[in-house]
Image (cartoon, rainbow, N blue to C red; front, side, top):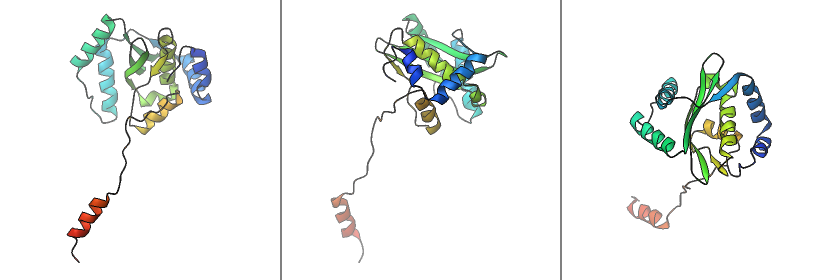
Length: 180
């Protein structure tokens, strides 16, 4: 998502459904930044286990990245929590001079109706608008996540394009090896 310097304009350009989810979440959800790297990792691992998947990075690697980002004042963990203390979603945000990146995140599908993930990412966009003009929601090949990111104004960019071309040489070689 580019041009986030005016976060109010970004909010106004969200689809009506996303703005409604944000308003709903603002009533019951708090966004906080005091989650430890251990708790973030455990939450991410727990959420993936719930859907039958395994985490694909080690805690040691995450901790190294997290600590380096904090040491250089270019990263933070945010999370959305309700009044009962249930965490709905988390995000690890990093940034440089030109862009802010939602590097890692996890959300509990059971909590999806709360709108917490929309609120969390919107609050991160507001935060990032202070020093960056772009916000990168990260990439995914998962259709559901792609749709959710699109509702937040993400622009889908292709990193590659695969195509099939029928080769005349290949056809000729197949013809020569065919039994008549």
